[in-house]
Length: 204
Image (cartoon, rainbow, N blue to C red; front, side):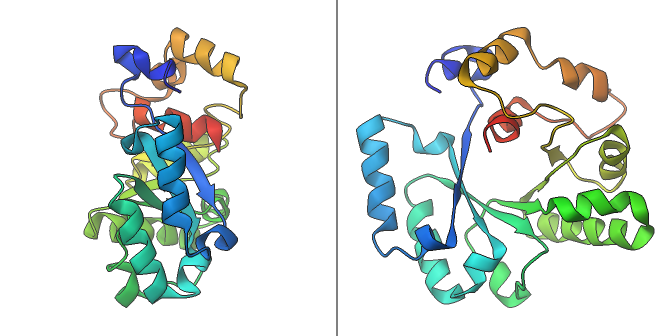
């Protein structure tokens, strides 16, 4: 990762790491994360931790405290698979998070009817109202891409852009530039996937 970010054009790259509910239940999680950062020298600002909506809501008050401690390390936090759990809006606005990730089941379903599209639109509006980024998961085809564009979603990940790759192929992809960005984006549309989303696209 350090080698990838050594070039100015890749300065915005970050890495996303999934936390399971089991990890999140560990009382010394923050200390473990700090120890890893210290031992590796990894910049906390380039790290995003993702935890599912269900895991967060199992003990919301404890989760808020844990997330605040993680945020103090300079790490960004995403709620993964959003829309599949049972978040209470009274809690959601209290979570110190940066990003909501729309579950792939909603992305897959937007081609099948307006009701599914409205669910995605609502999540996008909710994220923007809370000043959060919103990422659509599991984008697999151009139709989904353009529908998400119309619904106001600004970031995305999925096989349309790239399948998971080994490190040496990621280096090649970065050196060649974001060819898919030229193919799928234009000045007339706001649905552009910046460099900062590339590790998320490739490493989950």
